[in-house]
Image 1 (cartoon, protein in one colour):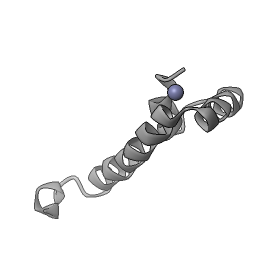
Image 2 (cartoon, rainbow, N blue to C red; image 1 turned 30 degrees about the vertical axis):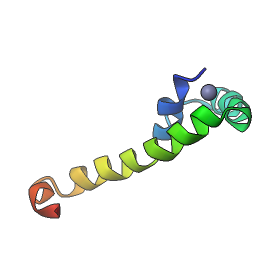
Image 3 (tube, rainbow, N blue to C red; image 1 turned 120 degrees about the horizontal axis):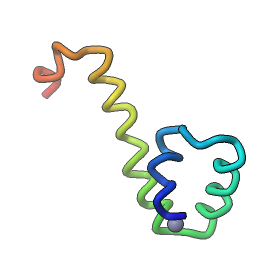
Image 4 (cartoon, protein in one colour; image 1 turned 45 degrees about the horizontal axis):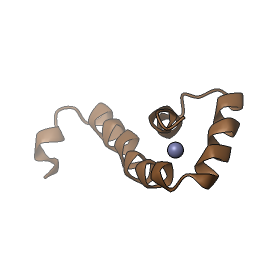
Length: 59
Ligand SMILES: [Zn+2]
C-alpha cells in the first residue's frame, strides 16, 4: 500500500484505487509525509515541460 503514494501523487490511480489509498492515507503518517514531498514533484515536472529551454535559468 505504501508504494501507491507516488501513483496517488501523480494522479494515475483509478477511482477505486484512489479511494482505497485515501482510506489508507488517513491512518498512515508515513504516507502523509511522503505525499507532502511528492506533491511538489508534478509541479516541477510541469514546469520543465512548459519551459524546457529555461530550465537551467530557473535558479
Ligand atoms: Zn502508508
